[in-house]
Image (cartoon, rainbow, N blue to C red; front, side):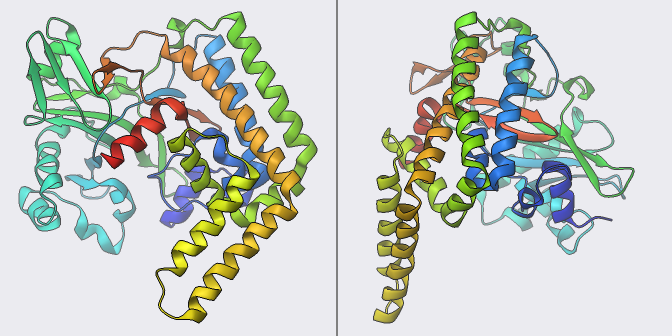
Length: 404
């Protein structure tokens, strides 16, 4: 049996990719933005980002409809549910419970309401939701396999709005007319969930992960599953969209090729700071710059220094981060090039996202009363899933919600 770390590495980063990508992956609870792969996983990550975006564009252009491209659901609690591969008993768990299978922490899996009371007694916001999943999810899941998904609603968290029924698991409010097929299903259901990943035993050992094939799920009026399937034959990929995509990709690829491994090696020592800095610029709607990254690193060092007591410890924190900021300055051309490449990858991705946004979706989407698009999309390239999200539109709104 493979270790869980090896299992995750095999799922997310097959052997044909740089091993550094696998070594940096610890949990399957996080999906990367495609344009971030370069600073997260180095040169191999940049290669994969470019290849994935070209593959996604081809997928859309040919109107494909398969599990490689799915709609990202803005769900609430992330849950795992299914039948234990050895006992066959149905269980539920929270987020990364899949890693407990076959391990010492299997006791954290819940098979009954009593188990849920024991494991989530100090988390009332989870306890009732877990009980709803335990009571109803098995009615739509196959008798074999384990599934991961996002909780949408239980009987207490959906709302009657006259001729509509709605639920708001996170930032997006989803709604459907009661006279539609989706609306009727939601109105009757005791549980709403969106399963996106299936885990099955692999012939070579361990567990294999793949996007859910929604046709394999059963139908039951008590459990509503919001399908993530995306039919790109309904998306209009116009010539101007293709031109914009190719233009940004050409510029990104030129920088990637000219910068080579040297550019990525320069970025690596501050990759975590770069990730948090980019998120900061999304929240503030500003453009990432080399100078801005330097200030971000220095400020982070000062904040850490303020949390320690001794002057020596404060000096270490400040000096360490000043050294990192100096590294950025000494390699400013590499960082400037990388940020430009990141920008063009992001613009190319946004072009594809906006094409997909124009297609029909089964539910209405609003945020604070204003019409919205889906959170984004997930594209699986070479068995590696990545996020395609317009960060300026959705990620910023998600950050704003976190502050509310």
